[in-house]
Amino acid sequence: MENQQDLLDHFDELDEQIGELVDNARSGADLSETLRQGQSLVAQTLSQYAIAHGKPMPATGDLLEIFKGFVKGDPSLNTVRDNVRELVYYQNCLDTGREDALPVKPAMMVAHTTRHIYFYLRSRVEQESKLD
Image (cartoon, rainbow, N blue to C red; front, top):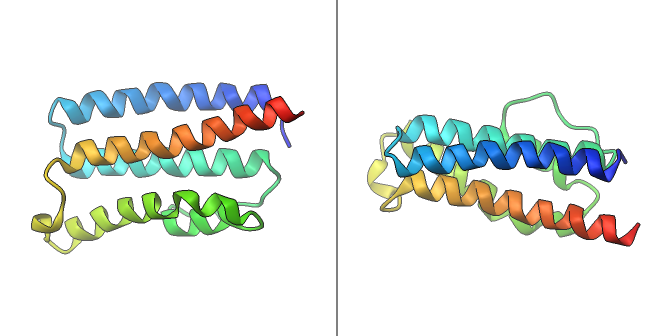
């Protein structure tokens, strides 16, 4: 596994980007752009955590495929499965013209879901570093 501090530094960078995502969502940014950014940040978060733990990750932009690589070999990581699926559901709603099936403030939900996944993995990294 890569140095814990290096991984925490990567996560600090992601935290700044997620902060921008939240600010954009609050200011009424376009949902499709907010969702694209949120999915990208989640993919980066999952990938960086997995790669730091020696897992090979698929070379794809498909969030569900990235999740499969991320969780492989550690079922406890399934904790964020429903959060990842939520982002995919929002994308499916947009792709099929079913905006009526989205929550009241979908851009904020994207931002909150992205931050939730980040916080969960950040706390795991911090706990793991205390165990070393």
